[in-house]
Structures are given as structure tokens and as C-alpha cells.
Length: 286
Image (tube, rainbow, N blue to C red; front, side, top):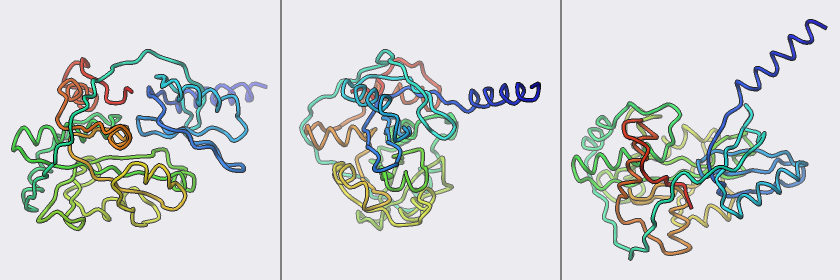
């Protein structure tokens, strides 16, 4: 009996240690087929898994998605959704319906790309969001040299997430055009996961275990509506776009991002580097 109680206490303690709390809205939900778990894709980039037979929890999440609620979600060590509660909206940025402005990215040399990479600040928080790091890296380089960088969103499909129990559905990094404006000229500047500018395939191989090439598309719906045919997709965007909902809003509502929103920059700097107060706009709020 004594050993049983010790084992039970250790089990409870372990589950508490492994539990992770995330504050986010829900981006989308994909219903599992047959015995597959349901996938809850959070605006933060994380994926929460719901057991195929947990209908009540699924219905609760569907309602939260419809109402665009902010949630604090508790995830188990395997990213399984344990519970959630509704919280107040942290921030609500203003999205201006600006007219589409042609974006002309800078074309630079490889040595310039390497210099930009080396100057990217490394004092990021380990648990910071990729989109906030990317936003500050592009913003600060623009302030230094007026270089118009791009960003590339890497989207993991539901097929890939299910096959590899992957806990994320997107990643984003700054990108520079080196020597031209073709796909072969893309150089990824991912200061956290690499040691220098990388070609797209070399970069995606870090995250894609199958080493399959990621299809390049320009519309968010091309990823959203094709979850079973590819492992991954790449979508290039200007440096002003922060999160996938920006891409979706641009496509569905013609809302373009044409400049840096300073309150959003302040928040991104605080979340990713903890160097400013959290007064700014949260990029995930709908």
C-alpha cells in the first residue's frame, strides 16, 4: 500500500510538471477521421489533441472557436488538451483597411545577409513565440539599414502533424532575397535554429522529418484547404505580416499590412526579449 501511494504521488507530481498552460485563441479545428484525434490549431502556433471519443470537449472548443474566445488551455506532456478556461482579451490591435501597396523587397548580397544575421539579437526568451522574434528581427534591421526583408511562413499540414505527433502547425522566420528575386534566391535568417543564412530546403529539413520539399503557395487557403496531400507549405510575405491570421485576413477581407504598428512592435519586443513593458497590441487578437 505504501509503495502504491508513493507511485500515485509521483504520477500526480509528474503530470503537474509536464502540464503546460497556453493563452491563445483557436485558429481552426480539424475533425479526426475514424479513430484519429481531433486537432485544435491555436493562434499561437501550438496544436492541442482531443481524443476521438471526447465529444463534449470537442463541442466546447468548437463553441470557443465560433465565439473567438481567448482561452487559457492546459496541455499534457503529449500536447493532449486537458482543460481550458475563458480569459479576458489581452489586447486588440487596430487593423486598418489600407489600400494594397506594392512591396519591393531589397535584393542583397550573401555577405550582407550574413551581416544581418550576425546582428540579429540573441537574447530572446526560450519560450518566446517565433512570430514575435521574426517581427523584431525584421523591424530592428529596417531601423538600422532600411533593408526591406521578407518573412516566410512554414505551415505543417494535419497529415504531417498526425503522422509525427507534431505539436506545432506553423513557424515563421525572416527571409532575404540574395542576388535576385526567384525562389532559388531565398535565404532564411532563422537566428534561433540556424547558424547563418540557409536555402529553403536546408531550412525546412530542420523541421520536416520526412525531408520532403514544401510546396510554395501565395494564398493561405491553399494550405488550409489541402491538409492531406502535402507535408508542408511555404508562404512568403512582406515583413509587416506577423501571424497566419494576417495572411487569411488579407485574402478574405483585402486587409493589407503596409507598415509596422508600433504598439504591436512594443508587445513583440516585450514577449520575445522582455526589454519593454507589455503595453502594446497583441498580434493574435481578432
